[in-house]
Length: 114
Image (cartoon, rainbow, N blue to C red; front, side, top):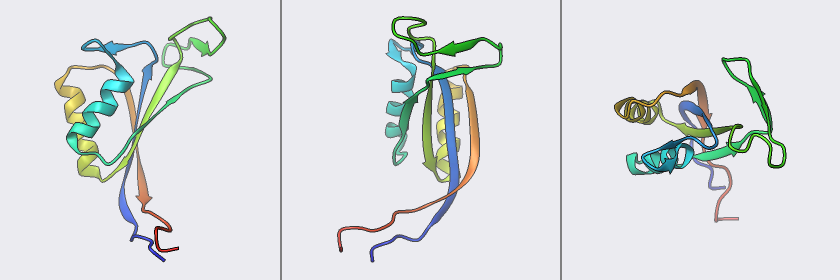
C-alpha cells in the first residue's frame, strides 16, 4: 500500500461570477494560474447550476439566459501557509470576492504499487 500520511490544512474556496475578468483573463482562470505560480499543489473550478448571493438575486444556468451570471467556485485543499499566500496575492491585486476557509485533513490513497 502506498498511502501517504494525512496532512492537516485548509479548504480554501473562492466564489466569482463566471464572466468576471481580471487583467483581461477570466477571474477563475486567473485564480488558478496565480495559485500554480505560488506553488499551490492543485485547484479546481466548478460552475454552479443555481444560487443566490449577498444581494439576494437568484441566478440559474439556463441555455442562453443569464450567460456569465452564475457563480464559479474555485477550490484549493492546501496547508494553511499556502492558503495565506493565495489570500495575500488576491489582496495585493485589490480584488473583491467572497471566500471561505474550512479545516481539512488530506492525503493520497493507493498508488502505483498495486
